[in-house]
Image (cartoon, rainbow, N blue to C red; front, side, top):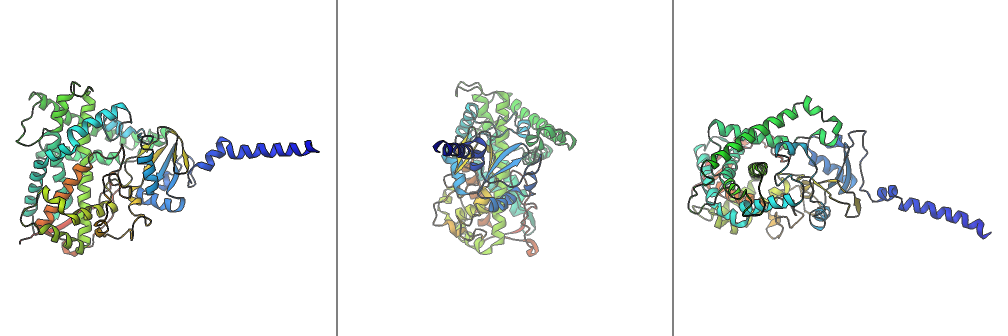
Length: 493
């Protein structure tokens, strides 16, 4: 009788063990929820034309951590502050990898730049060089004269176009291009036909970075990039930009790698890189392609994100006259001139910028990361080599974090310690952790001073009281689909 009962008991124990502890069922039990997939493409069809919005909609149904399949690649989408904190703080090292991208390989010399290179000793070395010689607090302050001169030039340009319709995107784009160019190579490139060509090349590169590459997710379909012309576009842009950077290097080498700097102005980044490339100062020899990748990175990384942020800020101010008036009152209390020293006291200005970045982060999905080993994300098991997308746009509009999240209300930041530096995961327009944007401080001071100066000097209005089109264009950086047009009138005390 005892043996009769023992057999079914053993069988029951075996099946329970298989159910709870077999790899397939453990994986199923611990994997994030996932929408239904289609053959071959997986969930690619659900990205839509504006992925950060489509992914937020999906997250409302499947949860703040969900698993999608992009072709053959598993992709985690994180849309909550807890998931973002887990990825970029708790397990930041594990999630510091970058997924392989043939696009960035083709454009950035095999992804040898800071933004896209794989995590490892090489990345640590080049990031250290970039931060120390371009983006440290000391370096950012050393370029103060460049910022103030170029912003003054912007003010003069606006003044010449007063009472006519002004393309503010073009104004902000020229400003950021000139600042970055002077800091990077010691002069502007925005002059004449050569400047126009370089500017259009960088714009094309930014478009390509944000272009979906089917070959990265369905490798056997990469031949389509030859048919649709994507491969040719990448090769042409890379070739033309390489020729431009080579000409800059040769020009500098012919001057014995030395640049005459004005009193109080720091050396430009290219000059510094050429001086340290042999590794005598850093212990890390800088190969030619790496040097060129860092120069290109400096042009690209700060340009579009900065002018796009300024354009979205001015868009919201023109949509909300009450906020514009309150900001005008704050900056105009200072009288005739505004310097960077005045910015520390402009609390409403800072609140306006934070609120705009909450609603319009420049890169709403940040740059994708990849797990370098198996890791636990909240309650889920994530295998190594899994890509993760952090939806900073969705987190910035999460009703669990923000009262009336769709409302533009800078006052929410006046009595708040939340900042954009990567320590508060409710607001991560520039990312956080090891792979967060190292140029945040540089970008913020440009945005603050430019905004303060133009609001101080001019009253702005929409032409013919037109309704603002808030449509977004798709890409790694999300700009307005149409340029922001406005009429500026000089303000006088």
